[in-house]
Image 1: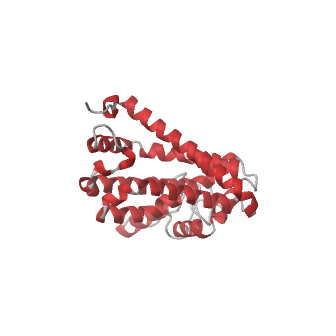
Image 2: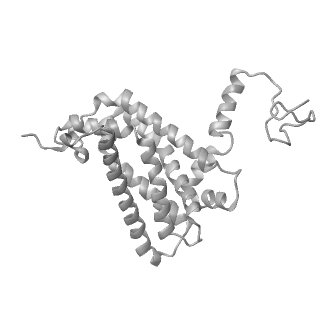
Image 3: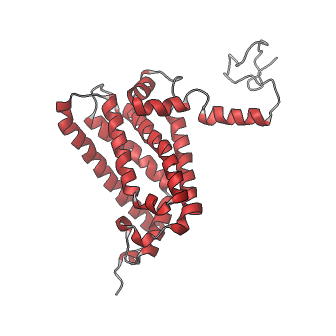
Amino acid sequence: MNCKNCNSTLRTDYSYCPNCGAKVVRKRITNKSLIYDFLERYFNLDNTFFKTISHMIIKPQEVCGGYIAGLRKKYLNPVSMLAIALTASGFTIFLMKKVGWEDIDFSKISYAQTSTGGAGTEKIMSATMEYSSLIYFLYIPIIAIASYLSFNKKEYNLAEHIVSSIYALTSFSIISTVYASILLFFSPQFYIDTALIYVVLMILFCLYVSYKNAPYAVKFLIWRIPLFLFLVFIGYLGISIFSFVLLFITGDISVQDFIPAK
C-alpha cells in the first residue's frame, strides 16, 4: 500500500508513514472516529490536556521547564494551549452576550463609567469585546518581560519566558472558563462587578508560575515580587491606554462619551 499523502510505499503494519509522518488511515470515517479525531488533534484530551492543566496548578515548573528543556510529548504544547484558551475565551464572550447581557446593569459598574452613564459603559464594554483576542495576546509579552527581569534564576532567555507566560495565562484562562460560565448563567452582574478581581487573580497566578520556575530564597522575594507586580501594572496601564486609543481610532467610542452632561 502507498501513503495517501506522499505516495511512499508502506508496510502493512505501519501506523504512520516513515517519510512524511502522516497517520495511516484504513477505515472509513464514522461519527465516533470523527469525534475522536477532533478531540485528539485539537484538544489532545486522551493523555496530555488534563495532565497539563493539573500540573500547571501543582508543579508548573515541570510543564514550563520540561518544554523548554525539550520534553514535548508529556504535556500539551503552548500553541495548542493558546488555541484552546482563545476558544474558551470566545465561548465566555458568547455566553455574556447571549445569556447574561440583558441582566447586567451597566450603570452600577464603577470601574468603567462615562458621562452618559450605563449606556456609555455598555458601549465601551461591547466594543472592547471585539478586540479581546488582541488584548489577550498583549498580556503574553508583558508577563514574559516581568518574569524575565524579576525571576530568572535559571537564566532562561526572553523567548523561553514567553513560553512560560503562555502556559500560565492559558491555564488560568481555561480553568476560569468554568467559573465564568456558571456565573454568567446564574449571576452575570456579579461576574461583571468582579472583573478586576479576575485580573488580579490572573496576575497572581502568573507570579506563582514565575516563582515556581525560579524558586529564590525568601529574602530575595522581598524585592522581586514587588518588581514583578510593578512591571505588570505598568503593562496593564499600557494595555488600557492602547485599548482606549484603538476604540477612538475605530470610532467605537468618541470624546462625547466622556464629556459631562450639562
